Image 1 (cartoon, rainbow, N blue to C red):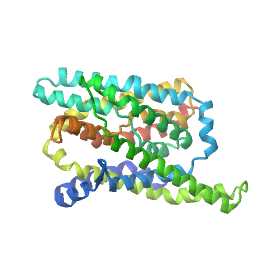
Image 2: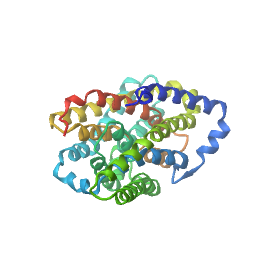
Image 3: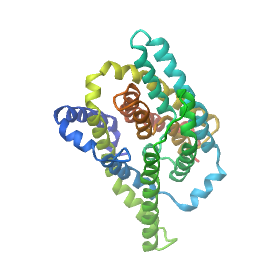
Image 4: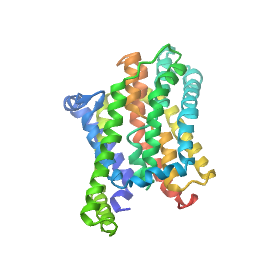
Length: 346
């Protein structure tokens, strides 16, 4: 790990400050950039995420994807946490905080809206940024790809009925454009690009010579600083987009963040300890726990707006999920890297 990466938490903290200041001092420019959307996905943020994901896709060997089936424990752990535990613990924590602990601090109508937003976050496991967290923990790229792909397939059929059940509404309209564009943009396109680049480098260097693998590694190493820069610029943009909300309603943001933080660290602890009990290799255990912790906030925000409106408390709650996502996940990446010795090497 280089000196710059060693202080990544500091750079992220500075990026948060820069983002808030940018949103406060240049709201017009930030609003214009925020309008660059397609299917509710900001195009500039999408490019930055793609820059972060691409180096990891270079490391994927096609033959390793098929080998994942011989080690199903990590995949089963991810799916169990994402679909049988996480949505229900998020709903339970939302009820605890907004129906009991915060009952005297908020109007009942607002509390109900915030609870709905938390539920939508709990039912929307992450798709894109998982690759970033996996890369930062030296996760197995092929295994992470399969985890995300299977998770996305389940998301297509399970998101709407599970959200409707926990929200107590008759039907949830899934924004299919957001879901499908996100999967194509953050999984299919970078995967095809990574595999194509890898194949060209291997062919140019001579198959089986070892030079091809070295060329791939050199390119991945050269792109890594761009990946970190993409992460920091993403943080700047996310906090710039939400600076007005953060500064106008800091108390509400803090109240919503409390159960989200407890959920994030609690779900991670459950998944990570289960991975240790299952004796999973660290390269599988860390991504498995991080996938269960992270959220597909684009989908959650889109559904909250569709169900409850742009200025609703539910939409605000999903936005708070955006604000805490990167700092929380980076703290967990740090913890994963510090506890690598807890797990078998392979």
